[in-house]
Image (cartoon, rainbow, N blue to C red):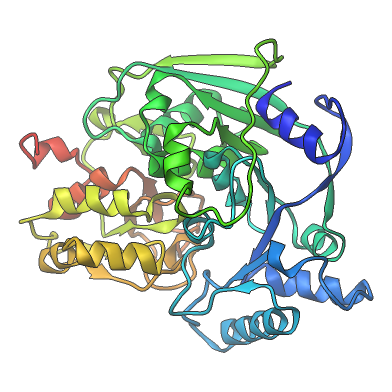
Length: 420
């Protein structure tokens, strides 16, 4: 069996599962946020069940419209807060919260070998830890809150092998953008994307979270990595409960194997209005921008801010550009503060926000007007994703976004930094 099949078989108490098979699976952790939880709470109440199956295995995080931007979002947050208090589930209020997919791994709430479901499509982020993690609808989450189980179809697995050593300024964001541009936004539809190879072995955990996060942008059910030494180093101070590390069998069957040599890969930029519409930085041309966003569940971790600060240090944001930087959690914010990164950002002319999804989904803290262009480290650039339907969003890694903030147009960091 593949890595995903082994996790699902073990959880389902079955000797073997195969792609296409429908199974019932106990969950180790489920989550919802301030947008999706109110729907799940409403449906949960209709089930006639008074208590959730296990409050320790449920996490609710207000992160999309928080701190609340208006009365409607405040009412949603109130609903979530009251339910969390009543049920005694894991809940992170403003002041201790973060973007859900940054916060859960940081807190050790998801671990290798887990089955994790969330009422958010980017729940697949936790595959970076060697967990089976996938997004589901709020009604599915409601049933899981009551029963502790989900039903699902076992996905097929595509193996992606990345050979070579990553060039300077090339990150996990570039690997996943390049992959999506190659296979398309439906290239891994309802499949598991298994990421392996020498370039993956040397990739940081933050880089792996980024890749797993965007597996959904290729239509995947989950993006998953083997739990290796890097993974163990990450979780050893965080894990508060037992976990299991799984490995695929040597004779595991994959529906497809895709191989890349990334030794000469350039940083990538996804053009509007799809992550699939990706080009290398040398092919971007002259595109002036109005806004830069560095953050989100894709690239709001400490390493991402370190990369951005490396580019922005001693520089000034272009007078025609708004540069918004959003740490993914309070811990990321504090660590960045201690390292002097926040000072670098503010001295450069950026604004630094409290942790929130904010502008990524067109929520608040950086909405685009008609005709405006933004380069962003987020995961989606659909029409109207960040505001006006007449605006444009370009996706990149933090280095390109930071360099573009200085230049006023989309540019490689190599053009403003001499091998730093």
